[in-house]
Length: 167
Image 1 (cartoon, rainbow, N blue to C red):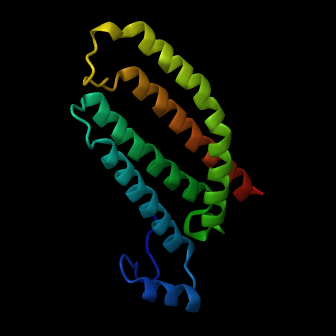
Image 2 (cartoon, helix red, strand yellow):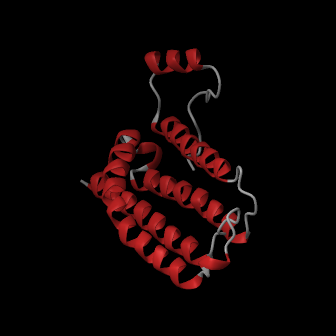
Image 3 (cartoon, rainbow, N blue to C red):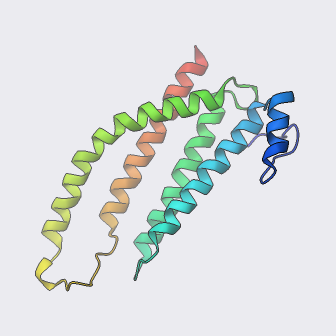
């Protein structure tokens, strides 16, 4: 993490944040912290929504939620450092634009992942034994599958930001 941040971080006071951006702008370290918090809070919100009205989460569900938080946070931190950290240039522009294009490209990989997942469930679950109100629980296979996909996605983002930072 950056050693120091030049100025306050605004969590609630939007007018003071706007004033700072207009008068002084944001340093790379400040922009990084806002991005990191945005990514973290977004993931927590999405993950929490997934547990309601989830009746019976299991250990794999919790592990998947943890990985869904850790991988993007670690990927964002790695991208910041390969961009040059606090001395880097235009991290926010690079991070969001590169991440978008990489995400679109990686969505194509979800198709075979989903086919494999459906095949796994089709083979491993006795569908006739499921009652109408019963839900499927998260299994190790989907946790591994999506963790690999997510780690590869953030690895690609880091690689492309590193390529730009070196140029």
